[in-house]
Image (tube, rainbow, N blue to C red):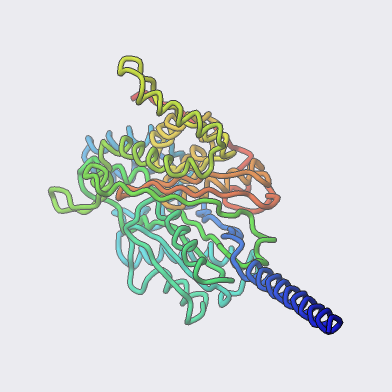
Length: 450
């Protein structure tokens, strides 16, 4: 009997061992399958910025002469010249063909032609560069704030390149100059749902249909500052694309101050007193941008800053609250240069870049890409941060492991931030929008007295 009991106990033990081994094997398989199937991140495979042909350049002298032929008042001409001199925009920036006509031809047809000129070229370059077949694109997102034709801009691309019938396409309008980063945010969320997908993002602004022909100075400024441009970006969450991708998205933070009336009206499209429609830029714009940036930084900071900077910030905030009002100190501004090696500040104008540099206590070299992109290409709206990243790459400044902060500002009022980590060795000799001219930059931009 004792022998039988021992044998029975032995069988039970052996069985439990087999069961344990079985569950261990199943667990390992399930865990491996989970890590294999889950998305490892959002990767920026590559991007292309539009490089306008030289015959579309608008030197300052041409801009003024063109305005004279269009019969603007002398007061308006003097104002345009003052803004242009202080804008930080050079003689190489470009306008689409209809704007070169006298008077400018602001028709729907010409707006569509401008979109086709910019977007068809950069999409073709991007897809051919990586031998991507158009039918392999799963998601298509475009943004153009002031131009919303029917059929939509994504439909133009689908028709021209023969994209799939079941592609997930979206068009964002009215979102302002920060819409480029907002498009990346939309794609990031879509990739959470749609695994193993490839997304194409198109960010641009139409200049031809949106020229202002009235006499309001707050609206005339947009004629002076904005230039043609655009960027096509290839985003993926496929495992195989990590090997060829340039960057991985680390964080994306969006801030919207639309509940504040002054912020809401700081960039506003409406008719002037004569009924001429245009976009006005208010005197509150820089203050609103600074407020939006501070709000955005409060959310982004804990995600990217080292603990030492966060502790100094918290300690200064506590001191400010506890000390008597006469002894209060300003709250410590964290040093974001300890979190990022490169900064791409929206090239909305020289004053915008100056204000952001001061707010973040950046060095002049931190704003170099933004100033040079503004000087060479002008304010290209939502695509400006991509021209800046392109500049940094062409200069050989971006190294593997570096982190880049893209900062976009737009109507609403919005401030959007994208934090990227470089995961590849960037070749500075790779052909891009700065090829052939990068050796001439940086240049000294003239400073005019106010």
